[in-house]
Amino acid sequence: MRSRTFLLPLLATLLVASVFPPPGVHATDVPACLADCDRRVSEGADLAECVAATCGPDTPTCDDRCAQRGATLAARCLAAGHDADRCARLGRDAAARCVAAHCERDEPPPCDERCATLGRHHMERCIAAGGDEDTCATEGRTVVARCRALHCERPPRCEARCERKAEGILRRCLNAGGTPERCAARARDALERCLDRCAPPPPAVCDDRCAALARRFHDRCVDAGGSPDRCALAARRLLARCLERCDDLTGPTCTERCTAEAADHRDALVASGRSPARAVLDARRVQRRCVTLCERER
Image (cartoon, rainbow, N blue to C red):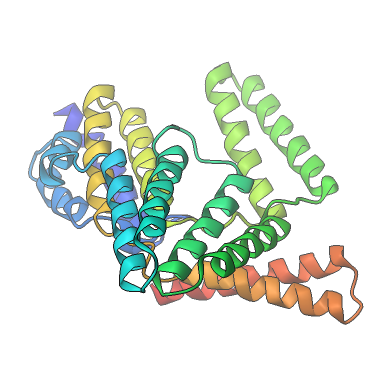
């Protein structure tokens, strides 16, 4: 009975997160099988077992997904009238980059790599829509540079404030009798949230959002007392179902458009004589307002 009752708050939290998701996780990414498990858990089912069963087999694998992405890009490249050999090479390169970015790490990628992923996706969408490869590659590099300037360059004073805040949380937690591991985790989470306010994180591509959702599910499942093996299996099922919805070749997301709008705003301010540092601060405010509107529209 205990395994059911202590997992009920976890599922409730996850379902609330599906309506009011944290940054980087979209409500539309959350599979409907979680809602079905809400009903089953209330009838006595185990959450991890339910998600593992209801969300289906953990296929395709991440490598399979990347291979399919490469094949889709190659096919759209051909349909756009490009050379067959170049399209095949483009598809292979896209699949390899996808594996390196999404399948070979357990932690979220750093800011500069997320911006590089955005640039690659822009280039691939551009080619799939019929654009010239060299022109699309140039546009992709511009997306990367603008993304890094807007999202990855934090003001040093803001970083220092965040580090002091995290150190205070760690110290108070230890003084209150918390374990070093738990207190370090709390301080690390506080630091990450604070740094995100210094500079908003880059918009996540669909695969990254799904990976974040699966990591959150796994961590909360284990924290609630679930078996690590069963929680891991359930998280893989959840990830696979979420990935089925992804097609990053169809067009930029709302948050990607926000980054482009904010970068345009920054460039216009600099052109009018505003200092680059002040222009970036103003552009980040524009980006945050835009993302808030994106969240409201979901």
